[in-house]
Structure formats: C-alpha cells, structure tokens
Amino acid sequence: MERTLKGMKNILQKLVILSSYFYAFQASAQVIFTEIDGSLLHSQYHPNPNSRFKGTIIFQNGTGSSLEAWSTNKTFFECIKQLGNLFMYDRSGLGKSSPDFSVSSAKPITAELVNSKLIKLLEKNRIKSPYILVSHSYGGLYAGYFVRKYPDSVAGMLMVDPVPSNFLYSDRIQNQFDIALPTIGEIPSREAYKLYGVSRQSKNNGITADGFYQQKGFNKTKEQVSELPPMSSTFPVIIISSTEMNVSAPTRGNWHSLQKQWLNQNPNSTIIRAHSGHFIQFEHPKLVCEQLNKLVKMAAQESKPNQ
Image 1 (cartoon, rainbow, N blue to C red):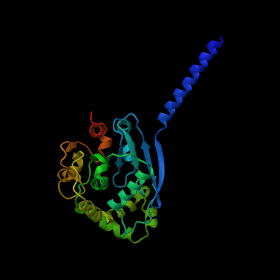
Image 2 (tube, rainbow, N blue to C red):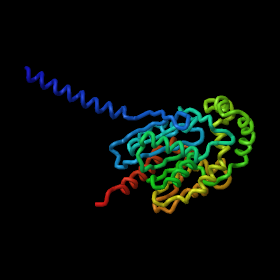
Image 3 (cartoon, helix red, strand yellow):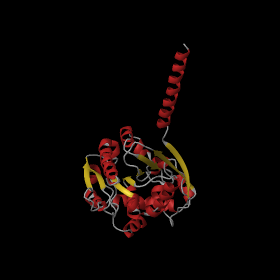
Image 4 (cartoon, helix red, strand yellow):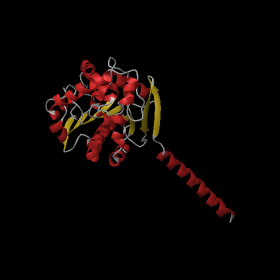
C-alpha cells in the first residue's frame, strides 16, 4: 500500500511539472510597454524556441494600423507563430502606444524618426537579429528604410501590398489632404491627437493626427530613403501585390509596376499577384504565411554552419 501511495505521489508530481511546462509555453507571449523618447510603445513578443530560424520576424504596420493588422486574422496569426520568433509593435499614437507630442508640422513623422525609435525598442528589449522584415502598405517605406540602413542585420523582407518607394498621391487623395491639413496644422500636437485620434477617425472623414504628421513628413521620408545606399542583394525580397489596389490605388501610375522599385538583385526576390483587396493577410492568410515561410527557410539555411 505504501509503495502504491509513493508511486501515485511520484506520478502526480510529474503531472504537476509537465502542466507547469505546458502553462509556461502557453503563457510565453510577452506584452511589453517600453519608454522610448518620451512616449510609451506597446509591443508583443511571441517566442518560438523550436524554429530553425533563430533571429526575429519584425512586423511594420501600415498607416493608422495597430499590430492587430497581423493578429486579428486567427488563421494567419496561428500560422506565422509556427515560423519563428515574432515581434509586433504599435508606432507612437497608434494602437496601445501613447502619442509622441514632440512631433509637429515642423518636425513631422518620417522614416528616420520611426526607425530611430524601432532600433531603440529592439535594443532595450534585446530582440535578436538577424531580422526578417514584414510590412504592409505605407509601412513598406519604413521597412524599406530599415533594410537599406541596416542590411547586415536583415535576413529577408516580405512586403504585403507596399506603397512604391517613390510615388505621388493621386489628385483625389491629394485634394483630401489639402483640405484637412491646414486645420490640424494650426493646433499643437497634444490637441491634435485628442481631436483627431484614431478612435475619432469616422467622425473626421478618415483624417487622423497620425495621418497628418505622416503626410507632412512624406516628402522627407522619400528623400531619406533615396539617400541611403541601394537595396542590398544579400537577402531576398518578396512582394505580394493586390489586384484591387492596382485598379483603385491612391497613387499616380501603375501600382503593380511601381512596387517593383523595392526588388533587389537577389535571385530569390520576386513579386506575385493576389486576387485580393489591400489587406491581403486578411483575405489570403495562407498565401502570405506561405511566402513568409519561404523567407524563414532560406534564412535558416543561410545561417547553418558549414559542415
């Protein structure tokens, strides 16, 4: 009887240990708030110790989007979590990140400013390189700046319907900006974020403080990107282009053709078309995940030590 009780006790202890391991794995996603240059940036880190790629996949959201642009579609989110370590974050003033009240009409949001904060965020949280950059829409300009400035830290780049590296807005969109910009530009940024926050977007005809300061920095951002060395060909670039935006893009020129500006000379770089709207990761989550998986496999293979 005593042996039986001891045996049962040992079994229970093992079950408790195993359950604690399971719980730790389930709870391993880290929600982080980091002070960067006076504002609190919200990020999430999803580790995957089983991945062959030991670097990190970093996600850059589009205009006005939070990191939920990547996590809302459960099919997509569950798929990408299997590929490697994920790092998602909200830029200042978006999602759960506080605004940066130091921005203004004279000091707008630019690629240099965004990436200065991102680098500090990665360093403070010890996010391991090399990085695979995944970007959507206008976030492509910020990701494009990153990979051209820090090519030695990059293992690959996936661009989901990115804006071209050098584009002009259509007359229709430019007219909307011209009407809204003077109104927001006359008030301090603290008041602008209060009156034109993302939560009030529908009441303000889609105009937000973030969109305003981004648009004010638009030409400077393009200039900053163009001043960097050309895109390195040491890593592959995959672009997924939507058919819908090719018809109704807010830019002048052919959307699909202009997106090719981001391609480099790497033999594995390519652009593919998806019969989809702008948020391809929502409409074709498996397609986007498959393309990211290709980059992860190539990066893992590249990092293997010579036999």
